[in-house]
Length: 174
Image (cartoon, rainbow, N blue to C red):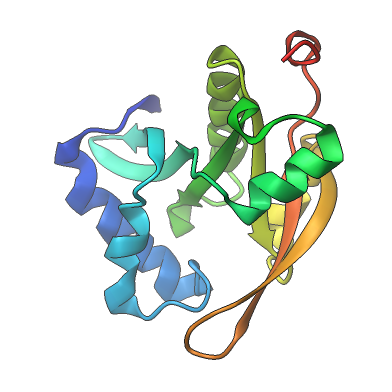
């Protein structure tokens, strides 16, 4: 298993994988299949990685730093950190046939470690109905610090939990 920086050449493989995940799990939530590629191309991505096995992309995770993001606001209120001292773990998804292999845990730890290396604390949001990822985050020591209810254009509301990574001693000074 290789975890490496995502490149432009990985776009098609990442979109294909995310479409398979969307068909199975409806993640990303409240998006039609034709909207999935745009979701992956988030405009505030600061870094992203893929997991590759036998030349095939089997996982993805990214860090985003969007200005005025409600998740960062909730996490900042809970931690006292300014939003620029946090990075949003985003677009974490794993090939359905690689579930329960520990790959999600590896990618989550990788992204959180990279956020620390950038001098930031990792935060994330997750759909309140998505029990498997919630169990992963909580088993890794992430702390639920709030919730968001974001109305979407199509009418439904996106109900999210907000989590912050375990505190790292070097971030207390940030």
